[in-house]
Image (tube, rainbow, N blue to C red):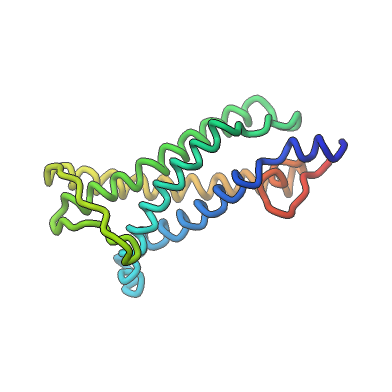
Length: 184
């Protein structure tokens, strides 16, 4: 495999940065979101959780726009049919969650017991959405359930990437890790 083929297999630098920045933000938000009731120190981070959720929404919209203009590289020959289907399905679910989670969070704080705007890191307030309190309650339920589903999907995604790298020893993980050349 020549250098051009290896470069063509990798995701673009912008796609890689979108992936890892959003992944870090999502991991932080999953941890804070799931544990804030049982770990008092994390309750203080709920403002950051909400602000970062809105940042994830904006970055995801930018990522989708980037992806439409710069498609993902094709799957390598080592990736089987069921793996391709699984990867496409998981990718779709991730994008859906990256949009739905911030939106349900926004609806929840706009229409919950104590409605309030989302303060975006002290720079400005993201206004409340004008919906019914019932919408806030439904959004809360959806947000919680999807938060746990998101956490499970992240674990499966990481396990799949490690399976490719450590067991199958193929080039899949090297396409998305900065500085890790895809295996030949």
